[in-house]
Length: 268
Figure 1 (cartoon, rainbow, N blue to C red):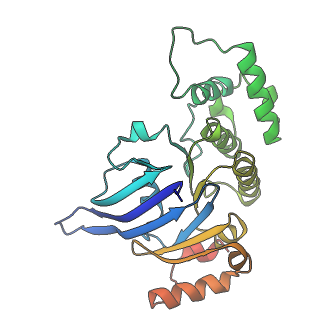
Figure 2 (tube, rainbow, N blue to C red):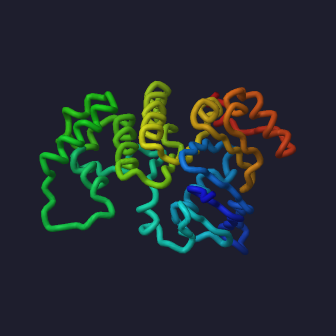
């Protein structure tokens, strides 16, 4: 059976041969079936965001292969991989053009990968579709299509970025700590929207988070990383039964040390 995502023996070392040498990925292997929603946790420097950056092509990997829906994208540029991927970053200011309106931002996302003609104007049909999609967010943004995105709150921007990232129904949706910069109430709303969009569009998704409770609550599978390796992979009913204490114990058992990450501890 073909996987939607297959990572085989990924290696990446930064600043090789210098005093700042850092092994970021140390033989990462991961297979995702179509429709899998995987949460990724681990301490600082564990390799979580590095894994997402490797998939997105932010820089070349040293060794290994990355296959999306049967296509080896390991040697493709970041630009060419964009047609396979949707991505939402931690910073609500990333992923949208602040000086452009909501509808202009959405039009750019909707037309990504298509032929570009001379006419830029947003059609009535497009505007109607954008309104319907924004109404689903339940944030009142459907009545603010002409508002500049830079005037919106962080949560509103992340909700729009999430919508934009999923408009073309990518093969893989990458969520890189996309609620970390939001207050708890707004973060919960954006996570709820994430669940809804992933389910409705039957997307395959990976979500990096520092929050153990969120990692347990969301998705059908959980992966824990440590020092560039996957040290724990759990799914289905076993995942649903997990408690934060179980994850802490699993980390200590697999890593041979106590989980010393203040940020993650505070997030639970």
